[in-house]
Image (cartoon, rainbow, N blue to C red):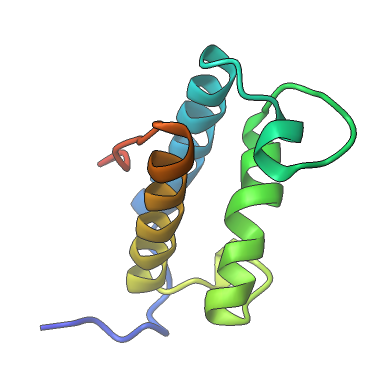
Length: 102
């Protein structure tokens, strides 16, 4: 049974999302991918968890859900956004991060 997309994300999902931001930032940095390379921006800088959230997750979130805050996301929306972003980073950069389970 599929949960309603409007169900609020769980506190576990919130923690997992931020853990994912940390892990992806670390993996992108370890692989030598700058924010410039990933986003094709002019300033070369290293990834941070906030950078992952603001530059990768949030634009995708807004495009997919029209919601600006991660606090507004439903449980299934978190999973759907993760799947699209993970497929993107896997396909273009060979970096896939399993979504944390806690």
